[in-house]
Length: 70
Image 1 (cartoon, rainbow, N blue to C red):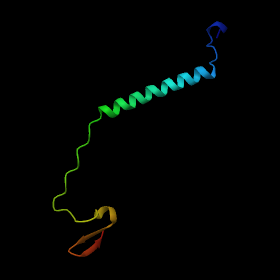
Image 2 (cartoon, one colour):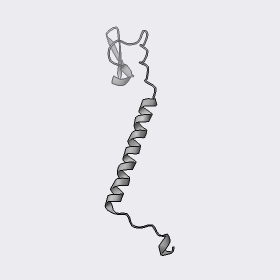
Image 3 (tube, rainbow, N blue to C red):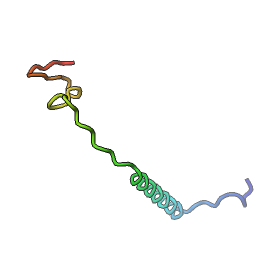
Image 4 (cartoon, rainbow, N blue to C red):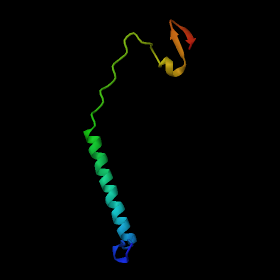
C-alpha cells in the first residue's frame, strides 16, 4: 500500500470521541427499541388450579391435605 493511501494513526482523543459517539448511538437505538416494544398483557388467572405455591415449581402436589410427589 503506498504511503499516501495509508490512514493516519488516530490520537487517543480521536479514538475516545469515536467511542463516545458509538455509545450514544447504541443508547439511542436501545431507547427506540424499548419505546417500540409492546407492553405485555398480564397473564390470565388459572381456573380450578391448585391453591398456594405452584406445584411444578416446588416439587409436590397437595390435594385435600394429601401431598404427593411427582
